[in-house]
Every structure is written in C-alpha cells, then in structure tokens.
Amino acid sequence: MRKVYGRPRFLKKRSFHYCAGCGHSIVHRLLAEVIEEMGIHERVVGVNSAGCSVFAYNYLDVDMAEAAHGRGAAVATGMKRAYPEAVVFTYQGDGDLAAIGTAETIHAANRGEKISAIFINNAIYGMTGGQMAPTTLVSMRTTTTPFGRDVMLEGHPLKISEMLALLDGVVYIERTAVNSPAGIRKTKKAIRKSFQTQLDGKGFSLVEILSPCPVNWKMGVAESWQWIDKEMTGVFPLGIIKDTTGNKDAD
Amino acid sequence: MDGNSAVGEAAIRAGCQCYFGYPITPQNELTEYMATHLSRRKGCSFIQAESEISAINMVFGASAVGARSMTSSSSPGMSLKQEGISYLASCELPAVIVNMSRGGPGLGTISAAQSDYFQSTRGGGHGDYRTIVLAPSSVQELADLTHRAFDLADKYRIPVIILGDGMLGQMQEPVDFRHEAPAELPVRSDALRGARGRPSKIVRTCTSNTSEMEELNWSLYRRYQLIEKKETAFETFLVDDAELIVVAFGIAARIAKGAIKSARANGLKVGLARPITLWPFPSGRIKELAATAKCLLVFEMNMGQMLEDVQLALQGQGEVFFYGRPGGVIPTPSEVLRVISRHYYQRGLKKGK
Image (cartoon, rainbow over all chains, first blue to last red):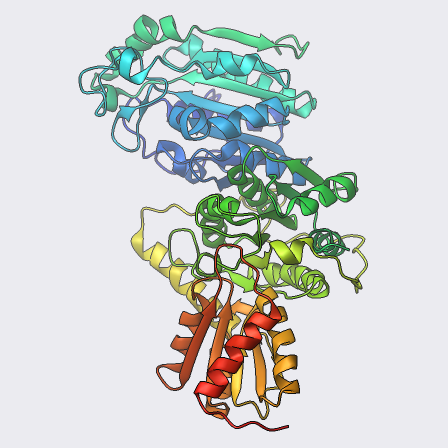
C-alpha cells in the first residue's frame, strides 16, 4: 500500500501538550514539513519564546534556543549575524511579538535582518490563562477584560503586521489562518516563501497565522474555527500584506 | 589609549566576533571603537542595538551559535541587561559584559562610581546564579582582564562581568596588548549550528520539572565552587609589616595606593589589599591579612558594598572601618590619606619605617 500521509521527519515522536483544537500543533507540523521539503534541516536554528509554544523544541527536531519573553527577534539577530549560514526562524505568540517584544520586533524588521518570524495570533495570552493580548478584539472578554475590551481603556487590537509592512527592511509579510484545510495549505506555502526569502538574502519576513485557542476563548473547537472567519479576519484580513521579494509563489 | 578603546582592542585580539551595544556615557568610546574596528572584520558583526535589552539578547543568540560575544554599558543600562544575564547563566552560555559604572541610583551622574558592586556580585537578575566579576584598576589591566574574561567565559560557560567605572573608561594610559587576534577559533562543541551529522540540540531555561531545575542549580553550584577554588585573584601592596590595611578595588584601589605611598612617607605602616575578582571574592586572603594587621579600612566609591564581603570573610574576627564616597564623587589621595591618618592615630597604631 502506498503511504500518503505520515509524521514529518523533523517532528519528534511524542504527543503534543497543546489543548484540543489549538493551532500550534498544526503550525509545528507545517514547519517540520517545510524544513524537510526544502532540505534545510542541517542549517535551521529556531528560536522559541515564552508562552504556550515555549516547549516547541520538544516537538521540532531541529536546533532551537529559547529566548526570554519578547526577545526572539534580538536573539535571532545575534544568531544570524554570528552564523549567517544558518536558516533562523522565530516562533512567537502575539503577547511575545507584539507586546513585550515590540521594540525587538520592529528594529529587527527595520534592519532587514534575514530571519523568518512565525507569528501566532490567537488574540489572547494562552499559557497564562487567557488574559488580554495586544491583538484581543474589541469587546472580547478575557480574564483581564472581564467586561470586554473597551477601546477607551485598552485601545484597539494592534495590527503589527500592517505596521511592519511600512518598514523598508521588510520584504514579505502574509497573514494566513489555520482554521481550514485551504488555510493550512496557504500557511504552509507562506512559511516556505518566508524561508526562501531568507535563503535569497532579501530581508525580514513574517508569517502571521490566525490560530484558534478554544479553551481560552471558551468555545468548542468547531465554534472557535468558525470564529476566526466570522470575527478575527474582519480585524485581521487574510492575504499578502507586503511582498517585494519578486518571487512568484512556488506552486 | 583610553580605557574604553583598550577594552575594544583587547576584545578583538581575544577573538571577539560579535559586539552589540547601546549608547550610554561613559562607555561610548567602546561602542564606537567596535563600530570602527570590529564591524568590517571578516566573520564579525557589530550592531548598535535599539536597547540594552536587545543588545544582551543579541549576545545570547550569538553565543548560542558559538560566537565569542560582548556587550557593554554603564549602570542604568546594566540594570536593563540583568534579565538577559540571568538567561545566559541558566543556559550556561559564555559572554563578556562590560560595565563602566557611574553614580546612581536612577539615571544618576555620568561620573565614576562603584555602586554596582552588589548588582554585579550578587547577580542583579533573578534566580540562583553567579557571574565572574573582574575589577581592573588601570587601562593595562582593563586590556589584560578583557582577554582573560573571554577565556574564563568559554572555560566555565558563564557570563563574565568586567566592572570598571567611568574614570577607568575615560582615562588615557599607555597600554601593551600582549596578544595578536587569533586567525580562527575552534567552534564550541555545544554551539547550535544546525543538526548536521548529529541529533538536534536545544538551549533552554524553562522546564515544568522542578527536580530537573534543581539539578541545574546544583550543577551550576558545583561549577561555582570550582571557580571559587581556581580563579580568585588578588593583589597586595606593602602589607607585610602593615598595621592598617586598606581594602579597595578598581579605581578606588588606585586612589588608595597614592594615599598609602604618602602615609608610608609619614611613617605610617599602611598597606593595600585589592581584590581583582569581586566574585569569587578572595575571602581567605582577606582573613589572613586581617590576622596580621591591627585593622582594615575598606574604601569604596559607594556606601559600603564590598564592605559586606569583607565582614563576611572575617566573621566578626578583626576590626573594620569604612570610608566611602557615593554618587560619582571621586575622592583624592590626600582625602583618603586624611582618613587613613585619623584611624591610624585614633587607634594608636605604631609608627615605623
């Protein structure tokens, strides 16, 4: 019988600790697939961050270092500058990349660091139990916005990808979602393109991935996947936000 | 050459491949030196980072992939680096961190001070960790200890702090660089360079397993004990017949030396004990000296921080006085001489040749 689906080579043989319906495990798998397909595993050095994905190195079978909360882009910068042959990616959540690490993210992007940022936007702090993130939607209830996010008090959801797109050092940003087979395929393509951009030495790239967090959103899995389409994509529209790579899509 | 530039040149000659820094007085000459002399070197990298926090985390990344890396700052900037230093210590990553300290607390002054002794020797970040702390007292020693700092950092997989001050950083002195830059350094065996022909590796600090974390602490502790045994450095000056011994580090020791020479000319039998490593602190040597002299005078450009280590070393055995000037005030040798003389005469110590 022909095997059509299996564990990617660079995903370790262990169960994910992620909650049912969480998007992290999907993105981990996509990363492992892309690394295998591009044949870059011997050059990959990943940076994972504080948050639910702090244990990403338990799953991804590539060299990885854990950065302090928010400092992923600075750590990745140090790695890439010290060892330019490496293919360096960061794996960061919204709190990490767009709140505590905003300065590191913006300046690494502005310097055009040749690194790939994989940015998981689930509109909430997952690991710490569902507090407001910079990306939390207006009126969305979290443990620290128990009455809903109030723009007069907490401001609006931060569109960091659109902000980063203004910077000349940034060559590629795409926003995708992993709440459907089509979205998952698009996400994989975007991750591959981001790595290719780095291999081509073009500059900073980022893939923002809208990802469900059913437990902290207090929804069923199916409902959380629908909620991304119904609510999140209105604030965070999917698609290419910036692309000056000159590369046509691989397929 | 000024002290800051001397650190830069010594670092390059020690094979420093990456320097990341953020402007702050009085250490800018070092950042500027690296911008001029390191940034264009083959295989080397210089970045003026967006913050001290970014700079130390760039060092973390560069060290993780095996590069000899350095950052520098002055007191308020050092406070920002503490998070990164804790992570470096936890991940057992080598790094050299220079502090040309200035008067605090807060933004403080830009003048030389020694008030970061606690922060440097106690580990200013969170968790049970130590950093080696080297305290030079001349531009030549700044250069020598910078070279040594890189070797110590690699040998023990530990962050090493060079605790200078604004005066050492700015002052001009002749300096002899004893090493040529190495053509190429071997890649550290624990470097993350991609899983080529070996299983993948991780550098991490986070674990949900408390016994694993406890074991890390024990293994660090054992290494710290080894460092205490092997790497303690100390200098003495005219202590053999001394009735009173001044204990001072860094630039304060330099000032004290001038005062001691004058005291000797006046017939006061005074000597100097200068810890070169602030951690590990030379407690044993301090105890030995306290047994031969009548009393110790701890002199610091702060409100009495190393004083606590001296008192801990003596465990109540021996008489200790303290004189300190905080906030960036630089005392003169004649001022210190007056303090020495006052204690000397009040204590009724014997004069002699």
